[in-house]
Length: 249
Image (cartoon, rainbow, N blue to C red; front, side, top):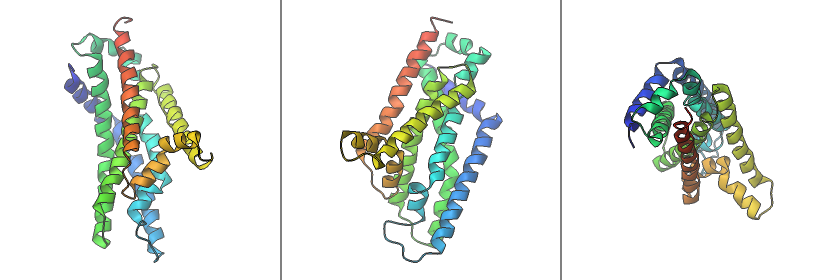
């Protein structure tokens, strides 16, 4: 795909030379630090912890801050990808460059995904702290981060698509948040509906169930397939949208 690397570098520079990534990193790490601190205080007061419980499992599988941070970070990272380019008119220069529509979309998407990974990287220090005070199951740590990565990758793809649908960053962010909240609410149906097709559908898309399973070291291939589908379909549509601009601008 022509120009993917160039677009990736351009977008990474754009993200980190502006306050956006730094503000997001501050807010994100503040939320995660508060969550981790509360979990440690909780486990410091109890003594009867079973084998499938612990601070790592609680942090990744039971903390509402984790889900809320995904709702905050992913739409905020992607809202400006295309909306700001279209508002400022710079998208015309990009579209006339020797770069394919797929290269533009994937380059921008991979830049946000790399930034997402960088935001999560400092949380590894939490695991280091736990390792110094007890035993850490690295298989559980790995599966937990895999779950977060899969969910985040899908959410960023949704945000990339919504950014192609409007010239307003705020509208793009709200559209992405609305779609993600809809998926979250659909997943809650797992705890409401009786066993049956509807219950199975809700369980399949439930982000709460996914993080809970992976925080215990359980890797369900169906979860990974869903995450991959949530990446591929929005990006495919986004490529088609961007490609259509070449004929209208």
